[in-house]
Amino acid sequence: MTLWYVFYVALAVAITLATSPSFAGKEKIEASGETGVTLAQATDEDRRRPGRPVPDRQQIPAVDSSRVPPPQPTLPRETIPVPDRWRIVESIGVNSRWWDPYNQNMLKGDRPVFDDWFVNLSVILDAIYEPRRFPNPTGTQATTNANAVDQFGKNKQTVLAENLITTLSFIKGNTAYQPPDYEIRIGPVFNHNKVVAEEVGLLYADPAKGRTRSDQFVGWQELFLDYHIRNVSDRFDFDSIRLGIQPFQLDFRGFLFQDLQLGARLFGNRDNNFWQYNVGWVRRLEKDTNSGLNDIGAKLRDDDVYFVNLFRQDWPVLGFTSQAVVAHNRNNEDDRRYFNENEFQERPAPIGDQRPRKYHVTYLGLNGDGHFGRLNLTGSLYYAFGKDELNQFAGDGSSADIRAYFAATEASWDFSWIRVRAQAAYASGDNDPTDGKEGGFAAIFENPQFAGSDTSYFIRQSIPFIGGGGTTITSRNGMLTELRTSKEHGQSNFINPGLILAGFGTDMDLSPQLRVSTNFNHLSFATTDSLEFLRNQNAIGDEIGYDLSVAFTYRPHFTQNVVFRLSGAWLIPGDGFRDIYRARTGTGDDFFYSVLGNVTLTY
Image (tube, rainbow, N blue to C red):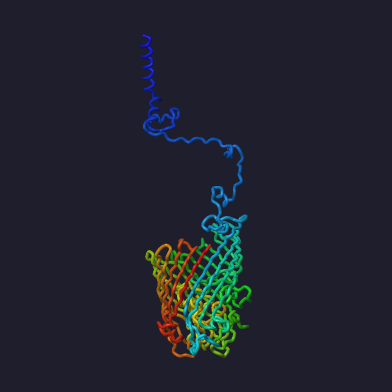
C-alpha cells in the first residue's frame, strides 16, 4: 500500500511539471534550436510566442583596466591627448610611403611637416626624340654639299631633348576648403638637348662649329610667393597676390600669351566662384637660346605686359565660361642689338632697314570655352591697336599705326568613344608694307593648344623664311606667320602675311589606355604682300598647303604618371609654299615631315 502511494504521488508531480507554463517554455526554446539560452533568460513574451527564436541580447562588456574608462556624468569634462587629425590614421596601420603618390605621403601634401605647413614635391621627366625635315638654306659661308649653288640645302634634322622638371612647394593653411595662406614654390628645370643637321651655318652662325650642337642648361621656371590676403564670403571667395616667376595664360588656348615669366598677379573670385578675375604685370625674362628656359642670369628685357581679365562661369548658358581680357604690351627695346648664344641676330629682326625699334600695342579680347548641350565650343576674338615707332619696311624712319584682328574657334561633338572636331582660325595680314599702317596680327608669346598643337607640322616646326631676312614663317610651337626671329628673343612684327586655317580632326579612345588623334588642316596666307616685298618676288601664291597629322597616346596605368606619345605629321605644299621654297610635291627632299616620340614620367 505504501509503495502504491509513493508511485501515485510521483506520477502526480510529473504530470504537474509537464503541464506547467515554465516547463513548456523551456521545451519550446530548446526545440527552436537556440543554444546558450537558459530558462531564466527567457522572457514572458518569449514564452507566449512559441516557435520564434530568442533575439540576441547585448551584454555589458567586461571592465578592462588597461583602457580609459568612460567619463562619469557627475565629473567635469575630460580630454585625452591624441595624434593630430592627419597622423591619427597611423594608429590603425596606415603609414606613409614616400615613393607612393597615391597613398598617405608627406611629400605630396597629405600631412604637415610641422604645425600646418605642408610640402608638395613634383618631379617630371619629359623626353623627346624628333626626326624632322623642313626647308633649309645653303650655308652662307660654306656648305657640306659640294658644287651646290642653290639657295636651298639639305633639310634633315634630328632633335633629342630631355627636361627634368622639379617643383617644390611649401604651403601653409588648410587647403581643403580655401586657398593656402602662404605658398612658396621653387621650380628648377634641368635640360639637355642635342641637334644634328645636314648643313653648316644652321645651328651656329660660325660654320666652323659644325653640324652638331649639344647643350645643357638649368632654368628657373617657377620661383614665387603666393599670399592669401583675405576671404570675402563664407563660401571662401577670396583675394590673393602672387609675386615672382609664375605661369601666365591670358586665354583658354594660349593664343595671345602663355609663358612662365617674372611678374605680379592679383587674383580672386566672387559670388561662389561665378566671377573670377586677374590683374597682372609681367617683365619678360630673357630665354636660353637652345633650351627655351628662363635665363635669370641675363639682363631683363625692356618688355612689359599689363593685363586684366574677367571670367564668368555658366554664361550665357550653364556649362560655358566667358572671358574678357585687356592686355597692353610695352616694348622699348630700341636701345641695343641682341645676338643669341649661337651668334644669330635676334633684335632688331634683320629685315628692312634693321634699325632698333619699339612699339606699344593694346589687345582687346573675348574668349569662351565650354559646351552648349552636347556641342563643345571654344572661341577667341582679338583686336590689336597701337603704334610702332619705326616701320622697318618704309626705310624713312616713319612710324605706323597698328590695326589687326584675330579669330579662332573649335567645335566638337562626342559620339560614345569618338570626338569629332572642326576648327578654323583667321589672323589678319598687312597688304601694304610701306604705308603708315600695320595690319598683320602678332601675339606677345603664343603657345596654341589648337588644331593639333605640337603634333601639327606647321605649328610644331620653325620654318625659316629663306631669302627674306633672318626670320621665320612660323616660330616653334606657334601658329601665326609673324616673320619674327623667334618667340623667345624676337619682337612682335605686325607687318606679316597673316593666316587662314580650316580643318577637322578626331579623338578616338580605343581603350581606357589608348587614344588616337587625327588632324587635317588647310593653310593659307591672308595676303602675301609682305613676302613679295622681302623676297623681291612677284606673284607668290596664297596657299601654304595641307597639314596632316596623327598621334597615339598610351597610358598603361590609366593615369598621367606614365605617358607614351608618338605622332607623325606631313605637309603637302601648296602653290604659295612652292613659290617660296621651289618645293615639288612628293619628291625626295621636298617631303616635309615631323615625327615626335615623347615619354613623360611623373611623380
